[in-house]
Amino acid sequence: MLMADMGADVIKVENPDAPDYIRFFPPAVENDSAFYLSLNRSKRSMAINFSSSEGKEIIFRLAQNADIIMEQFRPGVMSKMGLGYDDLKKINPKIIYVSITGYGQDGPYAQQAGHDLNYIGYSGLLATTGEKGKQPVIPGGQVADVAAGAYMAMNAALAAVYAREKNGQGQHVDVAMLDCVLPLTTLQTAQYFATKENPERGTFALSGGLANYNVYECADGKYVALGALEPKFWEQFCDLVKKPEWKIRMLDSGDDMLNLKKEVAGVFKIKTRTEWLQISGGKDVCLTPVLDISELENDAQIQHRKMIVENESGFKSIGIPLKFSQTPSQVAWQAPKLGEDTVSVLKELEFSEPEIAVLLKSKVIFE
Image (cartoon, rainbow, N blue to C red; front, side, top):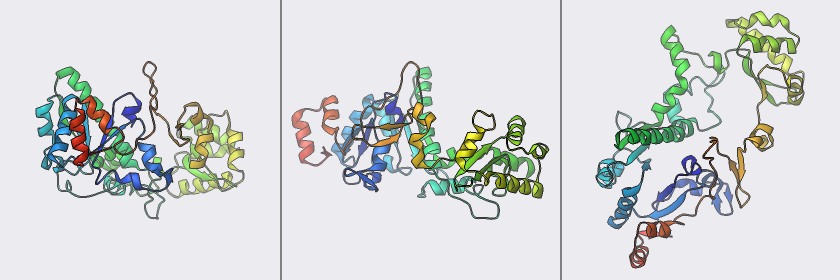
């Protein structure tokens, strides 16, 4: 979707007998899944029974002029269907073939099923998320799916396209979500390899271990995030709350740091979130609100950056995160119905009207 927003012609190919599961996830907006709508704008949709010989031929025709093919089956599935990288590079040697899996194309876990929670569990990210002495906390967003899956797949695909511009060669790109989520724990693993001490949950500096880099509840039950990591920010914060004696305690450890966190928490409980934001407004103390999802569209910065967009039907979703000065991205159209573009794409591939009619009648394609 991000690539489509940036101007790529993205064609989503689904088997009509087993389409993308997310089409059926509630809640629904005018008979379409809100989740599906939020992930599939600006794409075109083809419904092809690609397990049939006729369906495979359509994929071959698509691959002839495609820059990139992305697939997310378990390792070997596409090859068994005759649609693997070795099959398609014969048709288009310059094809960039991106395979997205949980654990990669090889290794002892390659054929295992998995989801976001499993990948962050293996990575150490889940183990280091939460409070000391309590169980791990599942992050509020799908970290492995989005950061390690979608973002890394886009990076990989476009890097491979750039490499092809240099050497004229296509290639197979193996994107494993476990591999790609591991860099999110770079600092935690660096600490472990340096000290051989396993970071205890809630104690790592950037994961709740510091008083000056933490989340605090306010008098109204809402929360603020204090990110006064550098001394200059922490000292200004101490002045703001009239606690100059805290300035030298920034590097406290053990029970001293726990006591400091309790003291800071007590101060924040005195005023509401709104009051704290008013007091800290214009001050360099890195104090921000912890916004609920319902508050996002009313935030001034998110509004200014157009990070909540609305389609012609009134459905709102996350906007375009990348801003280009010369080639600005834009939402081209809302998410397509299943097979909405099948016939038009086949015509672009120079299938004749009689050929298309036969494919429709034999249920190789659907519109």
